[in-house]
Image: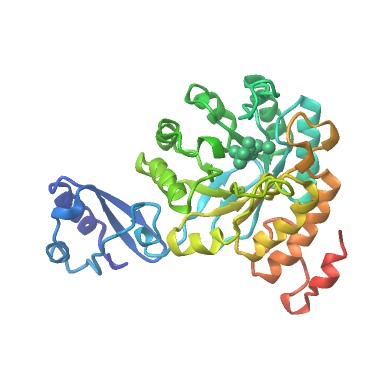
Length: 362
Ligand code: PEP
Ligand code: MN
């Protein structure tokens, strides 16, 4: 619809389309109002729709299997996912500063989670990650402290004002997780747990959807579509590496090309998790920086106060000091690419940037 369309006219068109037994959905963008039609649209004649109102600018068909997640569905306008943390309103989106998420793989005890929260906050993180329910390959590995860990995340949130991101593995725990989490994570192993996707689609919390370890980009976008089809538009994609043939030197293969590819396909924000992608702390900073250069909107990084003693994913966890050094570099690199961090604004103008100098901060 053209931007000057009266609200009553939009409503009239929606009512009229509804009588054709399809589901019209109103999307109010910055530059356009879009009415998305989802359902058996094969019976619809675009010319007839066009004639419904002179305010209809264009009628177009989305040929991709993912509809709501497609770039066309929002006429190319990037989605903004707003997360209201106690400290601030954090916005994930292409036209916003970088968002920094950090924290341990698992919540181990109160002292470690609260200490980690303070330290990542001091380094510039806006959200604290930490698993209460852990999807482990072995049933004999640490499975997470469950509900009691959710309580500890709530304490860390209250103490530091950081937003919380934590994984839900089972829909039976969803209500409890949603009470504490500002963003709910769907892990790689559950990316195609369709009943779980439908459940998180039925609530209004932002969802971080990690890419399945053997998922194609289209599988991943179809998983996002499951969530969006239930009415939750607040989906954030997270690239965390995919399985390829070499597992000797890295845990997974970080698919950085997925970022520019996704930009041609979807309006959803993109987070990169270099920790699970590489599996080794020594490679995390380089891949984090590469992710910014490739256009990621946010980074999620595992940080542990004492990685050698971590109950899960110690080898890939940065110390708080390493994280702080990385964040300083990211501030420089982000600014170079026009994506400064929401925290740590640099006084240096882009013209004065010296990337080589910045590298020596580590
Ligand atoms: C995690 O974030 O701790 C995690 C288990 O990630 P993934 O689902 O990507 O393996
Ligand atoms: Mn982990």
